[in-house]
Amino acid sequence: MSELPHLSPPADWPAIADGLTQIVGPEHVLTDAAAIDRYSADALTPYRAYYADAAFDRLADVVVRPADTAEVSRVVALAQKRRIPVIPYGGGTGVMGGVLPVQGGIILDVGRLNRLLRVDAASLTAEVEAGMILQDLYDALQPHGLMPGHDPYSVPIATVAGTISTNGVGYRAAAFGPMGDQVVALEVALPDGRVITTRAVPKASTGPNLNHLFIGAEGVFGVITRATIRVFRQPEATAYATMEFAGFDDGFRAVTEMTALGIRPALLDLTEDSEGILLHLLFEGYREGVDAALRRTVAICDTAGGWDAGPEPTLAYWRHRHDSALNYRQTALGRPRAERWERQWGRTFDYLHMSLPADRVLEYRRRADLLLEARGIQVVEYCLWSRPEFFSMLVVPSGSRRVAGRDGYDPEVRANLAAGVDEVLTLAQDMGGIMEYCHGVGIKLNHLLGREMGASREVLRNIKQALDPAGIMNPGKLAL
Ligand SMILES: Cc1cc2nc3c(=O)[nH]c(=O)nc-3n(C[C@H](O)[C@H](O)[C@H](O)COP(=O)(O)OP(=O)(O)OC[C@H]3O[C@@H](n4cnc5c(N)ncnc54)[C@H](O)[C@@H]3O)c2cc1C
Image (cartoon, rainbow, N blue to C red; front, side, top):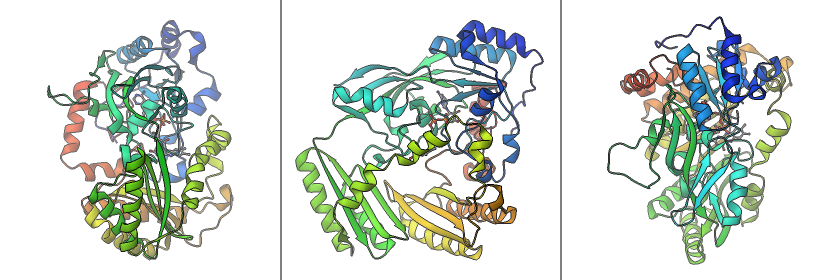
């Protein structure tokens, strides 16, 4: 997996735990089996990690919970000195295995760095600690009449730095872009313990923007400790709309026309499933802008062959947008790994989030359909989320037995699904796109990253060598 040093576990863990205790205090060094188990995985279940089974074999050696940047820096410096892996851990809600301690080591939970430090209502920015849960940030900004721009399903459970490190996409991405677009400045503890900060201004012409070293980097170049992010005025007006189409291509045409005209709804979701083909739209902003955008959008959809299905379906969609995360918090988060995984074995499905040049998306869909059909894999949902280039599919092996637990597990069905998934992901790459726009690479997609990056993969390795020659920072991720 990696040509960088593979770290061998040090023999003297008691002495290392002692050193960590001196930094963060005894109550924030966890070594009990239950804590180690629950921290050693995220929301990726082994079922979906088709080519990375072995990554689940290794557990962390210790979990530390520092209180501030200084403690984070000291923990990292100690790890560097002893050549121990450090795995930054936010909410542990990633779906690609980004926090898996594939070489053991220290899980560094930033959950105690959870304060809103400063709001600048003039610049429309907020300085936030890394481990703040997004819902807490929404609540803390509410009295200021402000809100963050990132609104994933996982608002109740994901952290600021975790969403930066995966460059996640949320419901309001059509207006505000993915989480990486919200980043103005970062404070980061580098793999040698040095702390760097970038300046909280919207743009510089004084060299490359180093924020981008850490956005979507899955913690391989350092631990984000603070972020200054863009925040937005709570909307003066909102309008929900649902447009229905007879064909996905018609809806796609409407979306590309809206995009070309410069209409930016907050929410844009074109979904085709067993219920039909619906374009969910939410417009937010100042009153006249919202009214005008809504009117013109309805006209565009009408020209593309769509019809107005009223605001109600989108209102219901919007109200329930975080339900899956609330359910996950109640039934899975913090539970033992085996319990989290057990319910997955019989549920054979995968969700795929490709990005392609917009003019290739419809052709891609047709070609992907043929590949999946040949394998008896059914697409139960197609979706464009926030922009025409972001295309998703929810895939299920047809005829698979829907039996919960291991009784429903069929290794042949899984192997066929794995092969079909790789075929459509590599098709996206071959058509000029990428295999994942939303959740990161983690351990799930390592095997396909080299073919996507080509020669630039060597550049990534060079940067890794320069910043982290010992390879302590989240080893085994981004195929490093
Ligand atoms: C029910 C559910 C719904 C979801 N919906 C969405 C969605 O709508 N959109 C979306 O994009 N994702 C979604 N996800 C996936 C997940 O919530 C996101 O990937 C999220 O960005 C991860 O945040 P986290 O705080 O849990 O990060 P973690 O899972 O803890 O970490 C993710 C990665 O970031 C790194 N990392 C964490 N903290 C730091 C730090 N301080 N410094 C450096 N690196 C760090 C980790 O090492 C890891 O590689 C969903 C997940 C679930 C379970």
